[in-house]
Amino acid sequence: MQYPVSTFILDNFPGLTTQLYGLPAWYWVSTILSLLLAIILASLLTKPISQLLALLFHQKESGDKSLFIDNLKGPIRLLTLLAIFVLVNLLIKNPDSEDHLMSVAIRLALFLTVTYLCYRLIDLGFSQLARKELGPRSKIGLVLPLGRRIAKTLLMVVAFLLVLSQFGVDVSAFLVGLGVGGLAIALAAKNILENLFGGAVLSLDQPFQVGDYCKCGDILGYIEEIGIRSTRIRTLDRTLVTVPNSRLSEMSIENYMEREKIRLYATFRLDLVTPIAKIKDLLKAFERLLFADANFHHDTYRLRLIGVSDLGYEIEIFAFAKTTDMAEFIAVREKFLYALFDKMHEYNIFLAYPGQTTITRTYHEDVSTQSV
Image 1: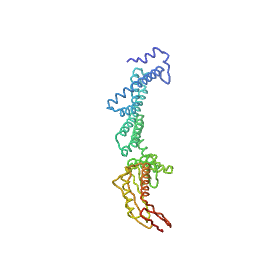
Image 2 (image 1 turned 90 degrees about the horizontal axis):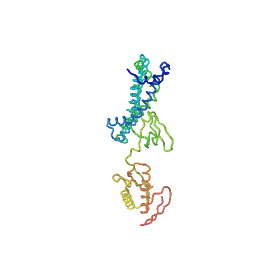
Image 3 (image 1 turned 30 degrees about the horizontal axis):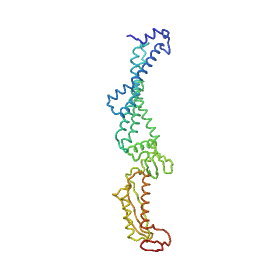
Image 4 (image 1 turned 30 degrees about the vertical axis):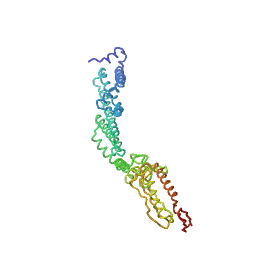
């Protein structure tokens, strides 16, 4: 068999027959030149090969195609480099036919490259699942990050065991030792494992997401971070509370962001000297204001006189705002309450005053004096 690369180097550089690290210098030069050539050609061929593979796997949409290429261009470049290097290496004479060091190195490089390819395929698969039309509260969408980490961990463990088996290590004995050691570690890290499983339960049950305004037990605030071990909650006082996931999974959680509408509830206590007819007219006026306000649902509401005591007549106002944003609701509620107060002023109706006070009220119809 002809070895043009080795022959060319020896013919032009006869001094490279000296030994270097147990191998002739010409062999090292040939290997380095073939590696440089493989790197250059692989860099040039990676893009067209990636485009061709994207076409073969029917990645036609721009988003899917770019995601496919971005995730696989690294493994494609390495596989192309390795293939070119092996082909060029066939043109280099092996100085020692009994030396299998190069073949072992090539097999190891191929194994690591295939492992890297599988690693990137996991990223590609989970990224494509995340790009699908999933609802914001989809359980699949929340479990995807955890599933990605588990898949990558299993891949690395399997790859590590396969490498050990190639080097003559008894993997079965290693697995037995790993199982015993894992049991000891599990017993020692019981609380940590509880928090890890608590985090998995939270991912599956999805009671909240980052940014949600929630009440967890007696903690009220915004979910800032959902970690593997714990969850961080930013309270209204701007303090940061860290709650272990095992404890959080057992709490009662009230998620205010899950509301499809926000309730407005208020009670007014009117002065006892207010004529009943005026109260009826006022309630009808309140109802007209509610129906005129497009910020409220008009199918469910209550505007009623709910009681009377020595402190005054009690009016209940119950309605649902259409918004689910708390800041917007506060503004809507303020505007509506102002409208109610203006209507009370228009009807010359006043709120009840607590305490021992002599109050004189002048109405359009008559003048009443009451001692409370």
